[in-house]
Amino acid sequence: MFAASSASAVWAQPTAAASVSGRRTKHASSSRRSITTIAPLRVTSQAIADPPASSVTPAAVATGGVRQKAIVIGGGVGGLGTASRLAHAGYEVTILEKNDSSGGRCRSESFAGAGEGYRFDTGPSLMLLPDRYREQFTAVGKNMEDYMEIKRVDPAYRAHFGDHTTLDLLYDIEQMRKQMDEVEFGAGGRYIDWLGRARASLDYGVAAFIERDSNSILDFVDISRVGPLALAVNPIDLLLPQYQQMKKYFKDERLRALFSYQELYVGLSPYNAPGVFSLLAATELTDGVWYPTGGFDKVRESLQRLCDEAGATTKLNAEVAAILTEPMAPEDSLVKGSKATQRVLGVRLASGEVMEADVVVANPDLPCVWEQLMDHETFPEAKKEAERWEDADYSCSVIEFNWCLDIQIDALLHHNVFLSGDYKGSWVRPVEVSDLAAPKQHNFYCHNPVYTDPTCAPEGGSSIMVLLPVGNMNEQARECKKRGVPVPSEAEMVAAGREAILRRFQEAGHGDLRAHIKHEAVTTPSEWKQKFNIKHGAVFGLSHGLTQLAAFRPPVRTGIPALDSPEVDGLHFVGASTRPGNGVPLVLMGVKVVFEAILAKHGAGLKAASK
Image (cartoon, rainbow, N blue to C red):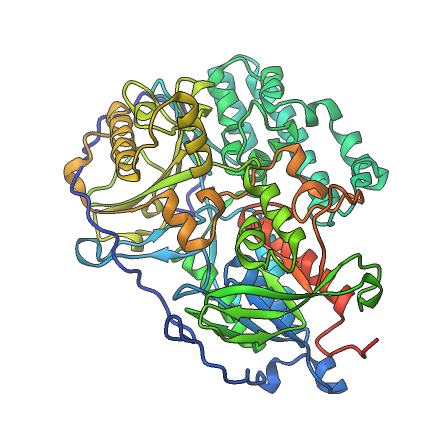
């Protein structure tokens, strides 16, 4: 179905489709490929073996000497990406992953029993900016096409509106213009104008603040950074709330919602997201939405293979309890220009084993690193930093429903977003059961990969994954206290959320799905928090408001000592809550920046001479 051309999309009243419901069952264990495993809470203390000669870079082989040791905490996308680059550069790399498989949230899962034969992408499900994936492979001398196949999803996705009309997002600009004009006279031309400016925001914004790290508040007035962006797009449009920008182009609330719902994924809403975030929709409409054939486990497996082939060692079930540091005077630093008062020594695992390292790269959610992995007694600045991010602005959490259906829903494309008829009210995140009650409608995302990949489910069935945004755990507690109501149990929220989604499907004409759900697996905010070290269960990390972007995103580097995060020589961060932001492509771009910083500060894989 990827090869099919973009059919002309129209606003359509829903057609009745058989649908269903069913019993709720316990989440079954995943089917995963194993790497090098270690028994839980028992990590061997054997020395890390040198990687095969073929995986050591020619420079390291030619020069010889003692190789620097790098420990990567967490085998998520950021951890795996950094590990393969460091190993390729000659470092002796060990990845320590607390779970029984690498990949973090990037994974595909299947379930036993009634769920057998169904496959779900339970983390990332939209592949955007595929060239950023390719760059990760070429950086270590490989070609992505030798590891996985990707296909463009066409149409990009279908929007299901509160009045039960639909609109498909098409790559063909002329077809898109025509259908926009059918909705609102003149909207097609304004769409083309908006898309050009949104694409400019993407191109110049990425070059200014994503591909280049931001280490000073002066970056915001650096003409070499902001000049091209300001010349291409009105700076006022970039900074004012996106809703104001949408009002300039479209009168129909559905069209405004169509090009701004993506703010959900950066922890914002159209009412507080700066207009520059139009680049999110531009990414989908110009670069396209892609799919790794076989699911996102192919991405995880491929990134892991890069690490293995570069000679990195991966230890599973190896939870890190602490990052070990020691105080030092800034003048004793081996890093040019460092203001650090601590240097990294290594890590201590939950088993008690201590592993030394020259460089430690932390992939867990950055606020959790300061809170859980640093010694607050010997490093009081770390305690202050943890407190600083406790009540920062975080993205939503989600209740994720994975439904094994014995039918297919014809009206669903591969990617679907259901948008409420209450355009503004729907951006208030549910925190209690009444927020999910009828007749309220809610914004949610629905993944239906069988549209593209029939191997996702048995013949005639479908694997439906729904992400229902809810308040993160901290937000929920705070809001319930403000309302004077008790915090509901997760079971109550799950039940209410399930009914809200099933009700919306039925109202949209897809029938009653209850009898067709043969197996259900649910992931709740507390499970996101526990399994993946996500602060407050906020699945998209820290939000991306102006005060948490670029130099203001942790570790904060404004050049103003009172605002900046503490520095530790040898400690670096990757992942969704650090710079540049969340989402697999941005995390991989951050990996590149951090890797280059490590080489600049610590050199390639060979140890530098002592000072």
